[in-house]
Image (cartoon, rainbow, N blue to C red):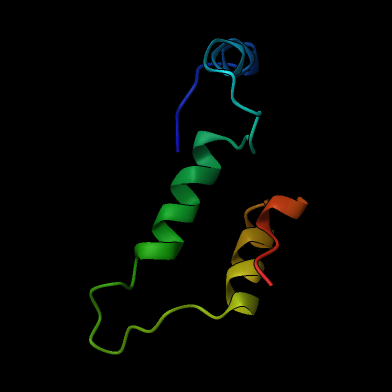
Length: 71
């Protein structure tokens, strides 16, 4: 995951490094994803999220493009 200050910065970086433009989401969405994904990781009863649980979490954060389809 890379952080950029604007979509124009993303486009410049992609051109410079000849990389396709990937998914773009906000810092708030990134923080929400990190908290939800890793928040219970140290619990003794932790288990990996199912694909359905992951997609539900992504949808709650507004991450709904085909990029986030894990099934």
